[in-house]
Image (cartoon, rainbow, N blue to C red; front, side):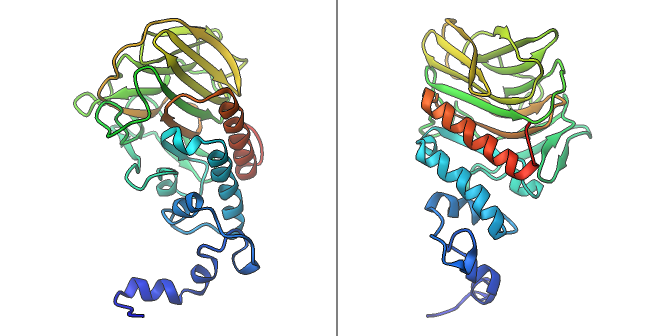
Length: 283
């Protein structure tokens, strides 16, 4: 074997990294290797997860793969993690690292909790642009956006939207989610006109907003449908999907094509299991 790179030599000589790499939760314990999907995600995280975290995050990724959700998402970010860089790391792809947009101060990252303090002028910017991406799963009549809100604050601000570089703080019209605007109303749209439904008691929980047809949209909160809409679809707009235009804490966020009912249930279980393991409870 020719060792022609200092970093390569270091990676082989680092006993912790060498013992754990590819060996699955527990490192040298003899546990089964990580799945390819989980391992690829771990290899993008710095520092590499501890064995305990391998078990938690590996179980999350594997649950999504088992449900076929690795074929659903265009981007997915777990923000309840140890540091900002890892919170911006896409679960599935190396080329979808998110970045912070902060025209003014206010966006705060708390380790093992997520992002908070967001408002007009600062948010998380995903590089995923469904209008220009190659072979996006998010399409006109089959699209989904999702976010997990880890706080109960009721704020009349948007949590999901789409914008362009030319006007980064001006939301486009086709994608939005106001979890609880005013007196218990949620406003949402995915590739179409805004519609509303009654929200839950507060703004916390896992939201899945999706379009499943030319005249079919639905919003789920914690696995339960909040409402449906027959509003007509509109062409996919060119602009990046962005997260966190409100004061809530957000722990998980993503976008892709629509989920089936079993996939929504599996996603809900996987997210709640992960959040509980990392934060100590829900939301």
